[in-house]
Length: 154
Image (tube, rainbow, N blue to C red):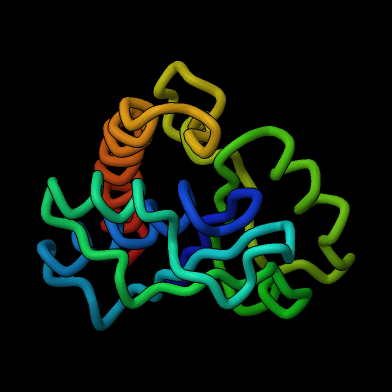
């Protein structure tokens, strides 16, 4: 199973989701069976590390984002991944526009897929530190549900 998390610039939400979910998968003993990555629909942060505030918030909960670097979604991602999960409606729309007709991957909104009541993981970039904590709370909830789904598929 291959999962790609997508946000706008790949420096806040999607790398956080990648790191959190990677830890969940490791803890479940499924690391050899699940591939996890993240990307952005925009290109302005390509090659950069995640936002320092995202790294600090994640580290306070035991997640490590330090090895991650931003990249942009590529057309081949739609063939390489089984599931592409957008952090918000705008990025889901952008993904649908980029999607080739021979798309193999399922596209969905991360939180909506699991009925968590919120349509989007809000972008914390222009807010305070509490926004990064809220993102982590939502991603942890979504990761629990995603792990259950993947266990059912494997």
